[in-house]
Amino acid sequence: MAAPVRDREALQRLNFLFQAAHWVLPHSPALARFYCSTQRGAARRLVLRMAPSVKRLLCRRCCSLLLPGAGGCQRLRGGEGDPQKGGGGQPRTVIGCWSCGRTRRFLFRREPRPRATPTGQRGWDEPKGWG
Amino acid sequence: VVQKGTPTLRKAKKVAVKTCLDNPFVFEWKTIDGEDLQFILHTLEERIRDVGLKKVETPRRKKRSPAKIQPEGHFDASSAQLSREEAPGGLGQTAGWTDIGIRRQLAIGVNEVTKALERNQLLLLLVCKSASPALLTTHLIQLSASRATPAGQVPRLSQTVAPLLGLASTLALGFKKQADAFSEAVEAIIPKIPALEVPWFQGTSEEPMAQVQSDSSEGKELAVASGDELPSQKRKHAESHQLQLSHVALQPLKIKKLVPNPNKTKKPPRRKKKALS
Image 1 (tube, rainbow over the protein chains, first blue to last red):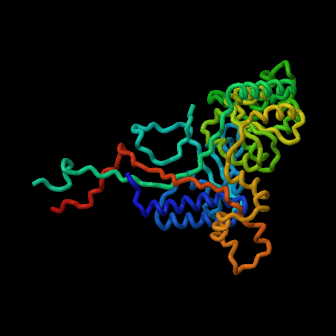
Image 2 (cartoon, rainbow over the protein chains, first blue to last red; image 1 turned 180 degrees about the vertical axis):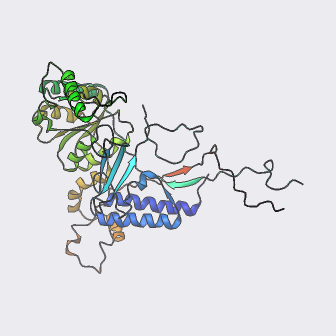
Image 3 (cartoon, chains in turn blue, green; image 1 turned 120 degrees about the vertical axis):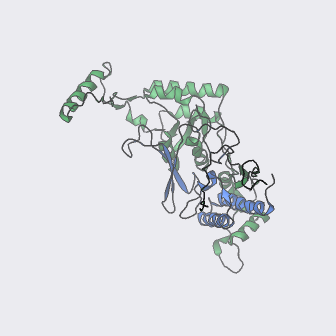
């Protein structure tokens, strides 16, 4: 199944902006923010989807790129020994933006959902390597 | 004449495949195997045993059986009695680490390692392969590459180190820069660890060398796109801030195709038309 040409060009543009933001971030976080906001605006206007792994790296408030090395801090919360929230709660990863201070929480799925058909993918980044 | 909408004549709808932009970057740990793995585990084991670092925990009973609901005053007394009975008779030590000074030279646990890496305090980082999901430790790859800290994934780190330290699991272990007790072990382990490849963070180390050379054409193109080199704007420090991006290698477009689940249980359609008598 070949994707329509119009979408492919737009996706290439998003891809370029995303990668350019990565390269530029160590030198100029403001420029990386501009690239990411352009990327998000273009995706919104053309109604293009982005994978969760891409959306997680973009701050929703200020559109800055949240790389673990520069831009955002990542912490693991929850679990048995976590004193926060009265004893843990669901284990989750919390990504905070350094420029605007907004945090986002992503839960970990403990048990993978059984799928009847391997082709019925929902496009979610399911954690692999469950033991 | 068969009416439209009869199940027998309803054609199968074409499955609409939706496309979405996928992340072109995939970062995975390079697992250390073979002799290097054995050497690292053996070195760590020996060193931790020599130092005698361990966390002593008094086992706590959190189980409250519904049949025995005691008032709070009695509960405090009973819990104190339980702790005395269950405390290991041979040690007789208070709960905590045996040597706090040495404990401060290490960063144990993913969060502590992340904080230490952000503050540039680590000399070496070891990560366990048994993390489930693997997302728990993947952010450490880029973080350690940005700080130029050697980092490696060791398959049985948690199984080896956690019992020695008295912990349930050790997914990440970092040695701080002032770790005098482990300096020899760190120096022996660092050469065994393969280098991490994160292209944009490796480029920053080459930048000071490239700035001395003449500007590349690719750097100029991207600089024009960013608006730094507009001839109308006079910036004295423009030369020092020019991006030397001749080594940039962009990844090809990666598209993820989303196929809706054909076995999805659909809700029965609403009947808008009511039979009018």
